[in-house]
Structures are given as C-alpha cells and as structure tokens.
Length: 131
Image (cartoon, rainbow, N blue to C red; front, top):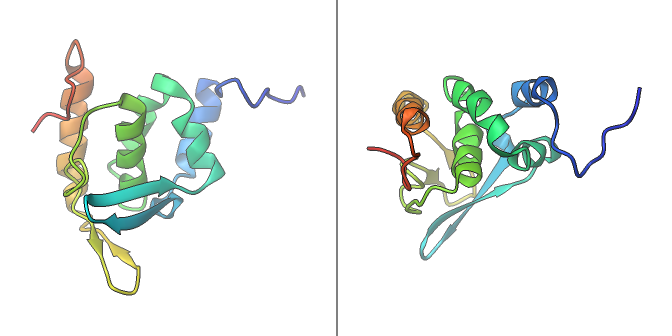
C-alpha cells in the first residue's frame, strides 16, 4: 500500500472513515470579550478541515449525532467560509462554565442541521447560514 501524501486531501472513502470518528471533544472552546473561539485540537478533525468541500455532505450528516454535532458545525463553518457571529457561535449556543467545561444542548443539532441543509441546497451558497 502506498502512503498518502499528507498535502493531498483524503479521498471520499477516507473522508467518510475520518468523519465517523469525529467527536465534539475534537474542538476546544475559549471565551473572549468578543465571543466564543473554537480551536480544532485533533489531527483527524484537522484532516477534515483541510479536505475542502468534499467533506461538507459528511459533516452535514454528522450534525444528527449528539456526540458529533458541535465539531461538525464548527468544521462546516470553517470549511464553508460563511460569515458568522461569535455569540451565539454561528447559531450554536455555547455554555462555558467557570471551571472551563463546555455544555451544549443537543436538541439544537436539529435546527443546525436544517440550516446547513438549506445552505447546501442554495445556489449560490449564501454568505451566512440561513435562519
């Protein structure tokens, strides 16, 4: 088997395998004066981030999973280049606790999935996530 060039994006099958392993913990959150700032902390999530538009359908599917929806939403926002507000973070309500823990209401994943599907089906894609 030939090793993959790390500068080349993964193929569709590899993207699907990586997306299957995506978890909300792949994103770290910091609160700032201007809002929330996510940081992609796992290598696999970084691979998805640099896979380009081919990753978008996989991430939209991942929005349905309560263990993946936060990471999928962050990666979709970064890959798509949509304009967004930092509070709530592109429509995602983030609860940053004093001890640094982060909480999310998993019920918001359905609305985020709907909005991303609307964005995906629009031609051209809107500059911001539809309401």
